[in-house]
Image 1 (cartoon, protein in one colour):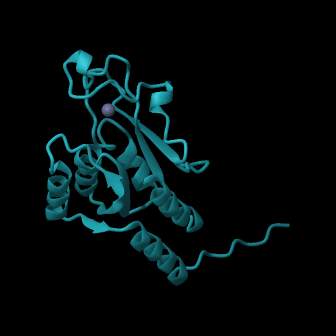
Image 2 (image 1 turned 60 degrees about the vertical axis):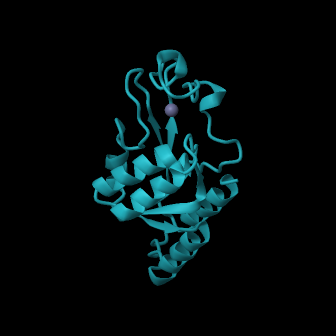
Length: 180
Ligand code: ZN
């Protein structure tokens, strides 16, 4: 179950005032990835339907950036960067390193990780916060091997929490001048 571990990382980032970006499939009902349109997948994440909502237990903080992808009927978008303003949104925050989790290891996680590298970001994949589809038995393993070969690091959710809290201790937040 990846949601509780993702929530732990989300909580640590929230406490450290670090930005969090959520990506979601947000498909039109006739999306080309659906079997009825000749695609690979059963219909999923049809925009403005319950199927496109985040997992009910996933903690999406107020003010978090939500990026929708796969919004055009004739374009697939496994990567959160594809056809979205995610790169711009990340760069606006001056972030140079991202921690990545979610579904699915062998499609959206893999493609998002590779695009994040191409965007010049350091990329860490949260290896205990991902799950694969594995249409072929070892697709996820191959996907992880590929992203690691390209320069992605694999870390656990606990590693991420420790790194973030350590960074916070060595760079304490500046005190805001008292108002009034
Ligand atoms: Zn999709």
